[in-house]
Image (cartoon, rainbow, N blue to C red; front, side):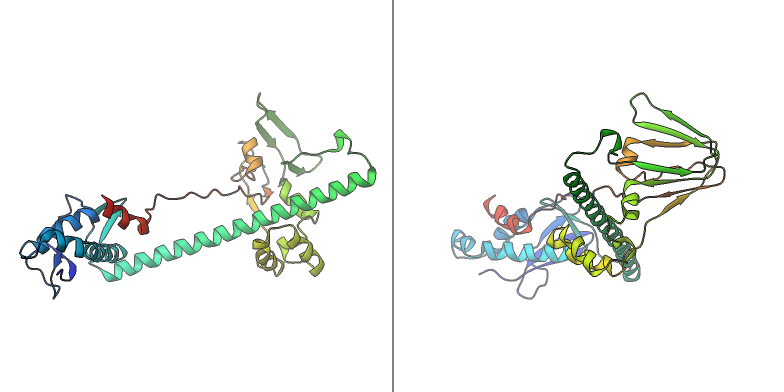
Length: 313
């Protein structure tokens, strides 16, 4: 019968052994760091080591205990991976090493924790801004549809402003030099006075299309309307924003007037992030358009299926 299984580290090697008392002895199989192995390979190596001295038919013993041995090795490897002692890429197992400094490891984990918490905050802020955009756009569509129904005709073409857009606000005395590329995808502005740039989302917010959610000043009736414009799964976020958990987003910058402000079509789509505001007296850019995030699925292995696949190999 198969005895218990365990793993130890000695002289930079990962050793798998079979022994009732979990101590190295006969039947030790070494997994050297220079030569990575797999769970399937370990199982095949352990079987003859375990049953080599038995008088019972090895075929019967292997059929009886090979699943148990593979499972024990697989569980032990999972523990070592959780402790960052070994690593696994697809089915290849590599030795990393035993932790030598618990304090340093704790510090590294704390840094990683803070980094992930900050990333969560950024994602939450981005999600809330995307919710505001959806509410503002849907509210605008409803308002335009009602206006067309009341007028019994579509609006004149010269009165339509297409999305996305920006609004530049400055003094009447300001001299503006605007250059446009041939493909009309880039615009270069030079101002000799203070100016402000607002994107379409900021304009819609100031028009009340977001029901005051961006400032936490949403009434109960407006909150009900706002919740009806988003999927049911996002309604709790809308309620949180109505309670004032989301602040306005303003990006302010001021640089020399000699450089110019360059806008491109992608800037309008992505909220003109990182836009240079060029003015001798400083400038302001207020906007909150957020680019829709893309989720990437990593190449993580399916742990549940791997053991079954190893058995079939």
